[in-house]
Length: 188
Ligand code: FEO
Image 1 (spheres, rainbow, N blue to C red):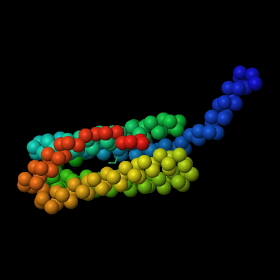
Image 2 (image 1 turned 45 degrees about the horizontal axis):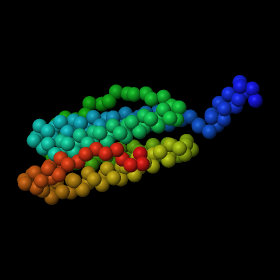
Image 3 (image 1 turned 90 degrees about the horizontal axis):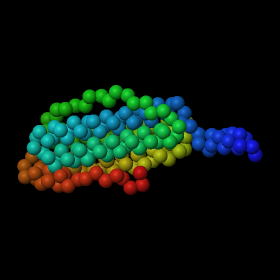
Image 4 (image 1 turned 135 degrees about the vertical axis):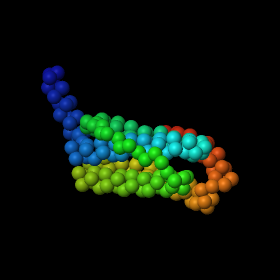
């Protein structure tokens, strides 16, 4: 096979193996990338608020949350590129910066994570409608991650409700929250 012929064979072979993202999915994945960056921004805002309330442990917990969300965003960023799509960044909304207290803030975290879970589920629905099995497969990681995220915040919220969000128990929980460190999830 002449060089030119070999090249065009390889190109057409590659095109059949790696189907590019279609425009609808590309748009939805970019929207999710923006949502993950907003989540990171929201948790950073919460971290700042908690630091001003002398809850440095919970402030650290939120900072780790901020790092996790950036990891989620970058996972989508890389996936869009790997599938031959275009990354299109949009404006990140201004997050809330005031809360009534520790319970209020964690109730917001829970509501936010529930919202993100439903966004991920909708994204899986779109990928299935578009018969894009690679994207369905990639999103399963996010589906499992959301189960973990919701469970960890719900545990913390239960403990905070038991304490009524105050007292020496809160001090101990804050100390525990200080130990949290960001570790990139395995298998991601
Ligand atoms: Fe990226 Fe907390 O969801």
